Length: 223
Image (cartoon, rainbow, N blue to C red; front, side, top):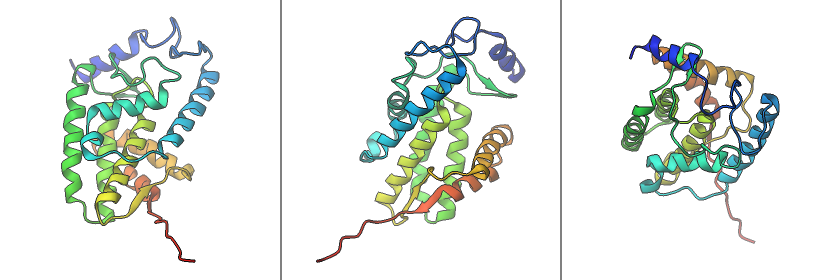
């Protein structure tokens, strides 16, 4: 099926994930007002993402599995959406960008995460880590495995990947999204759009250069 057909299909059909004749996602709270749902969803997801930051980073055999990415989505959005933790089963498009067709998502996710695990071994500098993050954010964005919450889950997953790298590499960095400013948001949005359309990563590199911080190591002091 052509790219144009994918877009037309995604735009013409009523989403199975939404209440009839609306664009409001079916949710566990029965909220049918989009503005209210946005507020509730943001609050719940923010709390769950914050909680994830307190948990221990998993080992490689867990972290670099498709199921683990699905579990993050389930954890963050399970209180609000029944589709949390499940790969989407319909085509979606944003603007003129069609995302991966559902039947290919699982395979592309597996290949992408396998490549990520291998490419980590090549990272020696901060610049290479930024390139790594921009590339894989772009890849996971165009796969867009979930009906909603892809960006938040991808950023959390990459935060954990950076933590893994920090624990198993001489590079001591962490991803900090707590102080994202207007320019960072613009770079992330533009980077997502441009990388999906052209593969160009400059905006995403700027975003990750801003959010990648030197890891603060707790030091113990003798009395």
